[in-house]
Image (cartoon, rainbow, N blue to C red):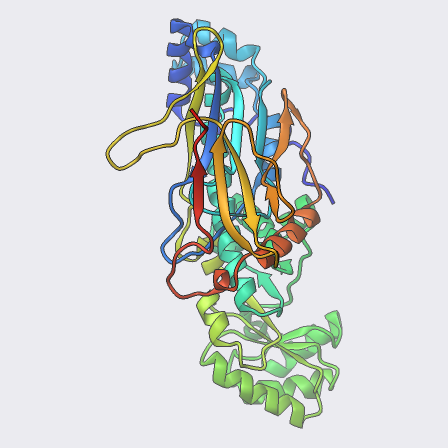
Length: 439
């Protein structure tokens, strides 16, 4: 399934005020039409992280297509006196006609990786800054956390269930990003409708408390949803609930869910009890404030799936990926692109448009991320180029099914050294090296 189609609503006001005041001033000076290159990159990964995950690309392409200043948008800007009449006239005829390249969705990235490259006039490229960063910073953060969780799960399915812990629209984006990074399903129905992410869900404690007793609640759920359903067994007494669940649903009960208490100890106790009752095929699903560290701690437990909410939708301690959008090249008076970069004390950029390659050993394991300016060198048998074309002269050319990004992440993570999935503090899984263009 491809990503959701473009929304009818304009995305032009999903931006910062200063993007438009910069545009107005650049139109006044004549520099607005200079060809420019902006790059999105991360100066450093969140503390202890070994890699990041690119996510949100499909959403960004939809947003770029919908980035237009329609009559209602222009009226809003005029009433607020954000820009002058000359700038409003320019915006009225504006559509993005530039080009975009980026790391393919689902791929891994490291500090300094140019995960998105935007080329166009200054006017059209600068307007995209806030839109690009708001989508990529959120989705990359969620996918990066989700990847650590699915790695810690060691092949056991992870269920995204964080909708009630974040903004209603962020919840949809989070479910999509988590799916890219390996989560099996989501509880969010909008994510299922918009992006085809498989959805799942059964009942909460309120359903049990609604009924006169636990047995009545289980009987109602099984009568409605069948014996393959998942029964929540920790509303009162877990041992009694498991016994009642099997009595009601039979030994073909699909699963039981544990949501509180000592999940490690309870998982062993419940597994033994289920087996003793003959429900050897009944799965155990655990939920309740899980993160990657809690999932890893349950690795030896007889757990069949994990439900993750708050930690996932907040990036498990890193709610933003820390990406920045910086001008790296602009046209000189004769039209030649020249590199530019910030040179402040603690934020030194690398000038010039970059290429990027991941170089692997003969065993196929990544050894180094290499970026550079100028002509991209030829690839050897163990290297791959990382930037793919996404938008060509205003036309989106890089859409792909979400399943493709999901598979790419699986393959990209497998390409990294084994240390990449360690949860202990450490450096990025591979170093990033910049090769300067020969003088």
